[in-house]
Every structure is written in structure tokens, then in C-alpha cells.
Length: 128
Image 1 (cartoon, one colour):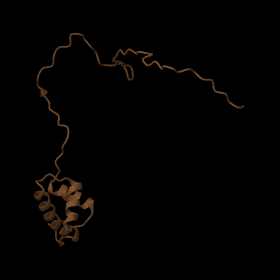
Image 2: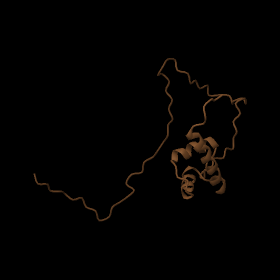
Image 3: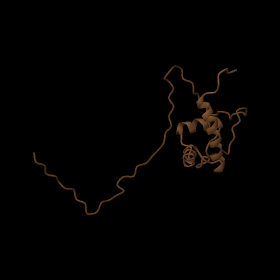
Image 4: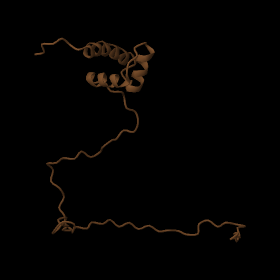
């Protein structure tokens, strides 16, 4: 048990947590750190951005992340039996730095795609 009274930082943090929760819920619970901090400043509650970040973490508040979502179509099961290796590959090296694994890829280069019309090489005279 704590025998000392709560610190000024924790008392201020408790008041600010209430304000942060109000602004967060008032904006459909989608604001992240940047917008929540700006919203608090707009309402007259001006304090450090790192304080907002710390109190948001204490409250478990996170902004909505928009962007690319990943859809997995295969759910791996670690208990499921793996397919048999009919090629008899061995990925064990007899000693350190002795295993070589390579992946070959064929690329063809097409040269002379661009033909410059009306271009003549010029000689450059330099003063020596």
C-alpha cells in the first residue's frame, strides 16, 4: 500500500484523462494522437504532446488506422501434417558456412530500343 499522497503529475493526469476521453468519444472514437492533441488545444486544454501520448496509452485509446487491409485466405495449422519432400532436399550444412542456397531468375535485356533521329555525335574541342 502507498502511504504517501498522489503526486501532482498523477492528479493532473486524472483530470486530463477525463478531458481526453470526452474529446475522443465526441469525435466518433476515431481520432489518433495528432488530431486528439489538436482538438484538446482547440478546446483550451494546452499541454505537451508526449503527455497526451502517455495518457492515451494508459486509457488504451488508439486512433483508427485507414489504408491497406490484408486478407488471408489460408489459415496455417501447425498441427497439420506437411506434404512429403519427394525431391529429398537437405538443408543441413556439414559445417559452418558450407550451405549454399541459390534462386535463379532469367532476365532478358533488349538493347537499342530507342533510336535517336537526327543525332550526330559531336566532337568537343578542349583548350589544353
